[in-house]
Length: 246
Length: 296
Image 1: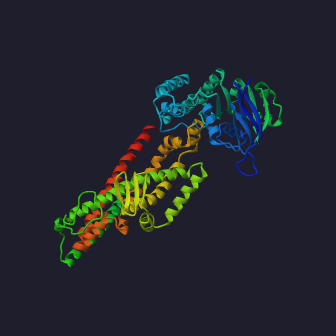
Image 2: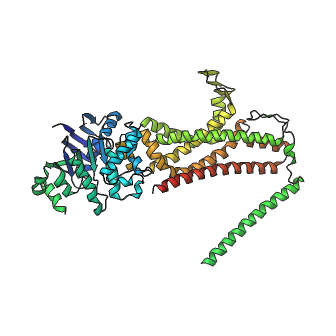
Image 3: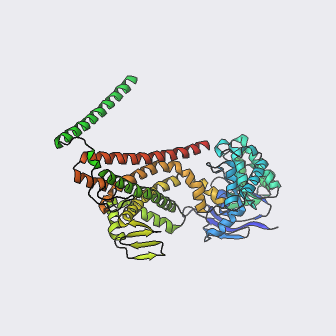
């Protein structure tokens, strides 16, 4: 078993005296799906945003695919990680002034220097895989939220990442659009992608996750396999959180 | 309700007409007092004065009209170059102000702060007397030659006066453009930065391809004002003796005593020039907005 992400004692503080991350350590194995749950403000989004350097660490150490990051890291290692780790955001964050196709091919062409035709062919394949091939020449605002989020997944996959990070990917969607995005993620997991998913979707966690990690107040409360987490959580805080979810 | 708005409109129109009538009356009275009447015949007479620089052949035996045309071309030259350079400087400084590099950020911040506090006239005099007149003879790599006679770039001679006005206008307007660009850039949602960063794009590429295109609709209207300001501010060229339209008009009026005609020509010239600039910018604006709307 190779380790994709190893985090040791991560600390992140936005305001002096309060810690968004308060000594978080964890490992994600290659090919594993880790679901991170917790109440809002528990630090779960901050945590996965440190994995590709969107948040700078104040303490601790990260090893992502063999590249080290710490509080003093420079720009170069971060760029290397970002080329190998895809990220999907709650608000999709598609580029509104570019067509769907250009949204997906921009990074492969500009960052990986792939030929444009080849990048476009790959983009069409990915859109096909996401079930939205016919949207290729539209602009983001012409698509529904669920379609936009699937474009965002395709955009991240176009760089052939080794790890995918999902930051509440379905939280901004209409309820009837959630399933199409979760289905795409489910397929990705089945294909063996290493995934870290911050989500409130209990069904997805129960069915797809290899492990569930529960966070509260910047700390890891417990990490379990989904079956025992949902039926028999060890910690009182986890049980209280689960009891409040429907 | 409708009647009141109609009354209001008629009232405003009457007020404007009255003002206009007053101005025309003043003009007529002034013309009568000087006993000259409105006359443009003098435009064909030889000017009798030399111009330090001219884009087209010119000598004192040429007409006033030709002298004014040369002045207009000199204005156009410094305005056109100023627009391009101020835009480049402004965009660079504006982008630098949102850079993650602290040195770049404070340099750009200091530039904007200092330049906006000092009157443009003083800045022009500074560039003329301190920066350019003080230049030693230094050929730089044979391509650019500096001296207190001016700058020769790739064999094209640029007078000290031109360089001073161009630098002054560029640096001054660039600072305002920098603030406009910064405002536009800040209006682009943080998520767009995070998205391009997470795709491994560099800051520069992300700025060029993702952020600036989205900032453009917010930037353009204010940018147009700055362009018009630059064109109007170019008349300060007279302070350092650059033969722009205003300087030539000034000499012409002194020599001919035709102040009213001279100012009318000056007004019309600048009106035309600025209409040209606003027209061009309106075209660009429409294109950009059209493209944004298509993507909505």
